[in-house]
Image 1 (tube, rainbow, N blue to C red):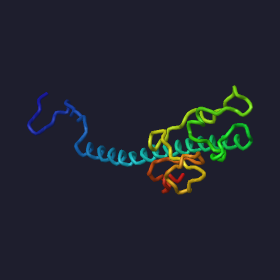
Image 2: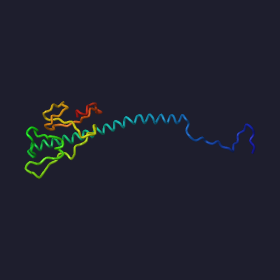
Image 3: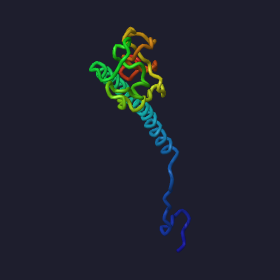
Image 4: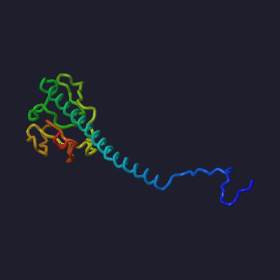
Length: 164
């Protein structure tokens, strides 16, 4: 079969083109860029929220141990120094344990370990004694009434971590 000039052959079929056009690639890249831009802040907030949960947990654990120590000293189960008012002298005492009164072979521990501060990534906590003012950032060293983080950061709710 001969094809005349100006006529198309019906026996040959046109091949469909494969691949993407430049416009399709640009639009797809723009959509991915927008999605990635939205996901990054959400990931940062999620990480910060988890650090805040860990900070709450660590503070609660240490404060509970301090309260248990105070309760044991008030009930006369452990011997305490006169000027400490029944509070532990330091965090290491809570971890190492103290001897029970009347039982020289028994010790009671209030903490398994000193928790890490997730905001500063250390075990160096701020401490307050009963004799210190509530706003004080220095510890008198007499006893431990409260603990706080040394981080100067601000939480998601706008409060300072050191005020928790």
